[in-house]
Image (cartoon, rainbow, N blue to C red; front, top):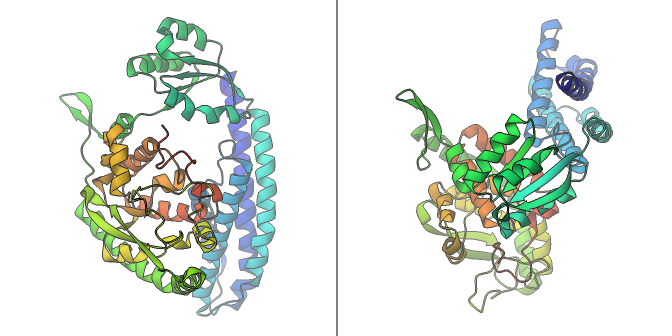
Length: 454
């Protein structure tokens, strides 16, 4: 009975995804067939049209997957709509590029522009309906939370706000309970969340949940993330995880450096007008320095000077204390608020990438003083420096400016374990999405100098 219901629910959601895909690719095909195909020098016929349909579908599915446009029930409706619009934009842009290449000239973009805005409305409606259908099919799970310490409990508080997916009815500190007690309590629940639970407790509860068909969600420890990135090998007929320091091949490193140089040069040329306007705005506001140089750490703790547009008042740290920006920080100038919001302050780092101090993708470079503060309580923080620092990475795409350092380490180690050109391109494309999400630049609270909460 459960399997039949599960298959029915999956089938309904699958049909929703097929419907939006067919609507997207079918619409672009009609624009191609009736408008662009007749004006190219060598119009396509039957087989060519089939090929174009496959191309349109592939482009849309790739970008929708990258931006999470099909993550119904997992992402919020607004995030889902935003993801669909961005995927639509890239699909339309790619289609225009193809039509231009086939025509050997710039073609009229108006039909595709009109389609983009029309389909964005349709996609938004699709997201609203799909989300409503999903939660009608999937009732909120009756949930129990098990934590190991106060800090881990704080990290799971956000679950209580996800009322459409989880209804937290009971919460337990594993240090004050026994396994037998927790086994008894878990029965009758649809989902279990665990964070900071000692490995012996966690593993037993996990196995119990699997055996009794209870959904189990675990916030991993740093060691879990490292193990997950290990390679599975067979040694003496025994499956073993081989875990070692981040190690990439010379071909990957050469390709990564090639892309860094080429893309940074292209980006510098394209962004130069924006950099000029930003520099003038900073200079005209207070007559101070345009650029802000600061020592940061890259691979193997090597120090280098990162270059950014100055967004704060001059001598913002004249007391000698290294601190992150706070929410509503009075040190940030009016011009600084704008360029930080638009991420324009980061543009000069393109020269750091061109020079070789940084890469486009990698852990964000931290200041030596702040890194030392983190490493006092969390020595694992230094593990981020197995690879060259980057302009963007897992922590920037999936986290925020004020994401706790423990979580940043885990996300950065996920990148270390999954390095590849495809992964780098995916993260660069994902970065485009977060440029429009204000919450990703939230500062730390007033009582913090780093992202670590005391």
